[in-house]
Length: 77
Image (cartoon, rainbow, N blue to C red; front, top):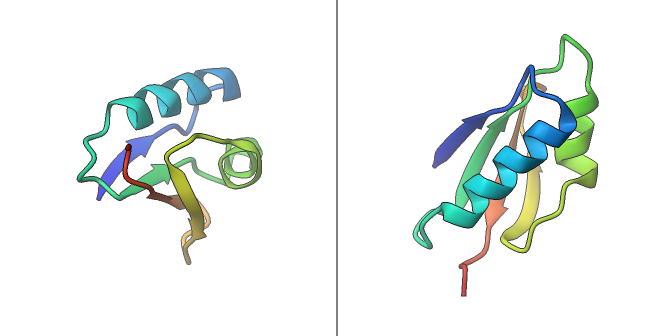
């Protein structure tokens, strides 16, 4: 599983980084842990969990840690 840390970014910056990461991940990667934080506000958390869309995302998985979200990915093809 790969990991990306977006906490502290603006939503527009987070979208750019998420798009780039998902577009360049190898087909063999099927999960991405997104660390967005939650104590400084939950704008990024809500964005990742409810608003963000990308063709590789198959499912959004919530964990026991409110500061992260797991993105289950499809094969690129």
